[in-house]
Length: 181
Image 1 (cartoon, rainbow, N blue to C red):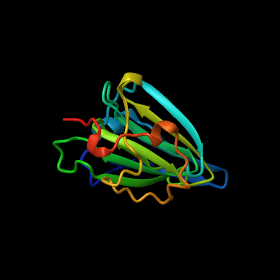
Image 2: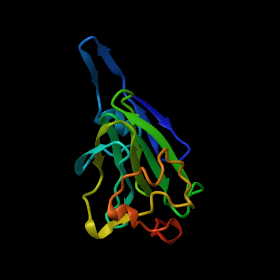
Image 3: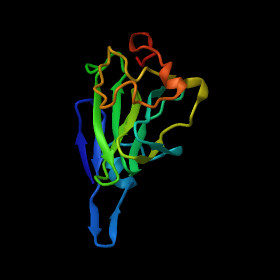
Image 4: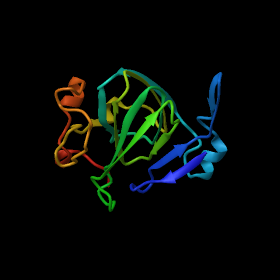
C-alpha cells in the first residue's frame, strides 16, 4: 500500500496494489500492520456501506459528539470524495480536498477526526464503504450545506442536478457551523 500526504494535514490518500488479470482483480483493502505504521487507528468500531445512483451528493457530515475518523473507499463505480477541515486552530481551517475514488483505482481516503465529509456519485451507481473509529451518535450528527459559498467546493454538478436529502439541503452555513477546537 502507498500512503500519500495531502494538502490537509492528517488526511491521507491510500492506494493499494491491484493484481489484475483476465479473470478480474484482487486488492487488499485493509492491513492492520500497514495502517498502524502509517499512523491510522488499529481499532474500528463500526463498518458502514451505502449504495447510491448518479448525482447523489451526501454530506457534508461530521459528528460533534463522538467524533469519528473515517477510512472510506468505493467498491463499485466512482465518487468525488471531499474532506473539509473543521479544526478552528488548523492553518487549513475551511479548506477542502477532493479525490476521485473508484472501484477501478482502488484508492481510499483516511479522514481523521476534525473533518467534515461528503461525496458525489460520478458513475451510474456507486457502492461506498467506510470504517469509523466511533459509533454513530444521532445527537452528535452535524451537517454543513454541501454548496456553501464560503467553502466554494467546485462540485462537478449543478444544484439542479444534485440529488440531496432534505437533511443535507437544510445543512448549516459554514460560518454558523459548530466546529472543532
